[in-house]
Length: 304
Image 1 (cartoon, one colour):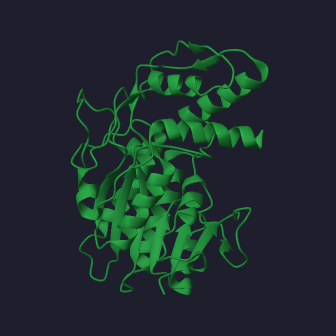
Image 2 (image 1 turned 90 degrees about the vertical axis):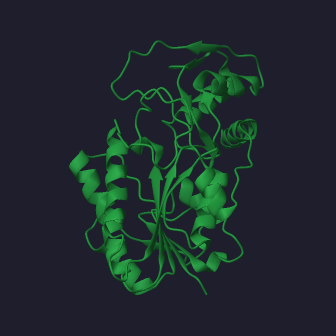
């Protein structure tokens, strides 16, 4: 039976991977690993471990003998050197420990690795130059390059680098634009007031986390390797996204743009070309943005 190890698997994406697992991966074949288990995790389905400790990820691979490993670690605090050491280190350990074992490794990357589009207004495929302008983008790119260095090494596992564009959906952590918009709308429903938003002219590609999880499972089940862009392929202005949230509010509220000074880390336009993953796996995103918005608001209302 195939067994799956989700490193850092109790976060937003990991939780949806567990929920969306295909029949080939029943719940008792999936192990999460990290500091804390999910609240509803079945007994024996989680390994409590600090993955920042050198050697911890390698030990898990060697002792648990998984057939598939998802590298989902996402620590955001620390210096660039520290974050590269953690995320690159985990990836390096997993692949090195997997030499000769024939397993598949899926590394969750990010569109932050790409940075500005250099004026391009066509969907970005896997040949697009990577020029990250944020700390997060820099260490994610280094994490991906670690995996690339093992290409061609004798006995190296099959590695997929899944570059995820902007995720959206129920449970999205605070601090990301859709999550902040959802929370402000729910607050406005309760107390009245306006919904503030920063720059409304930037363009992003929003992919529902459920579709993202399905794509990752498709890649895990395939024989594909290398880099794949995972997005909706649809350009959405932040102002238009905000308008969708406002339209779903249960009481009238007003969208108020907030003046935000320009930043060196600004990226005006970023949309994925998803032809490669379509051709390789047949996967298609199915969740419309309006549904993602509605489900986020309903989830927040239920927990308020």
